[in-house]
Image (cartoon, rainbow, N blue to C red; front, side, top):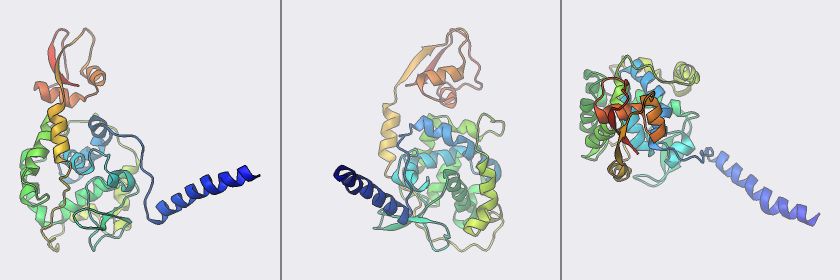
Length: 287
């Protein structure tokens, strides 16, 4: 009986109290899985493409910003609060929140029930503010102008922001997702429901945001967390490129899986207009 009480008091009770603490603070338990950058692209390219088709924001820009802001899904904010873009609460926010130390102590960040909500809110941030209005003069395939425009609009304080975003887009072939013919993605059915309920949950329809003309100007304050810049640039610099000879019957998809990369990265590295390969063809792949 003594052993049973010891187990209850020393093991179960602390675990229960810890759970209560996280729930009381509005923090959910994070996934223990560390995402690779390629995993992040595969997991969220679908929502990025859907948001591009809905709002005109290039999928490549959304993915690159998510990679930078969330350390490709591995930041505490992304894991605990599904916030992939480091968006802070501000006075208009009606949803859940979490407190973290950032530029200032104990800052308020938005918390979402699902990562897709973070992507939808990111679209609303760009479409509802006059600060980013000029971005929508660019085509969704012009990712370079979008990256420069975000920097000019002070999305980030770093003068390297546009260069880093563009480097990520081009190195991993994210611009292939900006073409309207790209259909090779999957997305969870909850996305449609989340878009429809956005207004009810957060007090504003993301579809109506683009039509708003009387928008209160947001003070020029950087949205972006650029603390991952050095890590990402180092990751790109340390990524090994190797030549590979295509074997009979091999596909670009199969080769991408073999090397743990993406089809789009192979296309971008080799400037290939299609995914068609021939036996004996020599290509460059990431390792």
